[in-house]
Image (cartoon, rainbow, N blue to C red; front, side):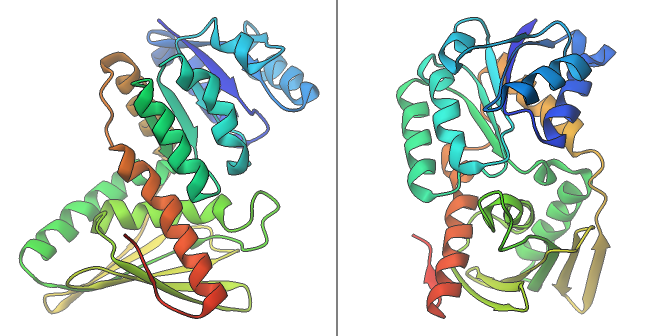
Length: 287
């Protein structure tokens, strides 16, 4: 039984993970034993509703001493590194909700600490684990291998003015779906903004993928164009929390990461590149 710490419990994501862990399937593998939040009232309400057997910790350090793994679901990516630090320092598996961090510097520091302590990390948007995302990945792989893919397009929500670290808060969903479907070898990004909507072109070696972000887009939509056809897919992402939690528990048990440290940090660098391109009007190269 994996003893889990849940950190930052204001979001719907924290509630959904708690419900899944408390389900019959979850009880066989894990349970939430400790809670911490920047707001003690949030923690008390959460425990009363979702985790009545969990203890509210006075500090993250205290919490790290009594668990086997941690799930970080604070809405602010800018807090994630410091919240994950006590658990990573103990070498335990950590899941960090999207975005991994809200800056490349924090992402690099988090990964460096995880490497030093041999800690397994899973992070980011659950949308990359959606069944539809994985199905599109297989279609794109075949088209790329056949040199048929001319371009792709993914449209989903993100708000430059989100109170939760701005564009970082939601852009991670679309960026991570693109990386999972089309590959992690993006070379460059160029972006423009019109009326709060952002359009970015991600350049690959043999094709480009357009990402469009709109604050009010509720359902992700993906297009693959090439080989004399256009494939359009309105994506079902209802399975993402169950799939992501299962992947995390698998990692916690096996000590094997499903994605490399480089793959986990890349979405942060892509979002940063989009923002730098918006600021400068220039194409930004990803090293």
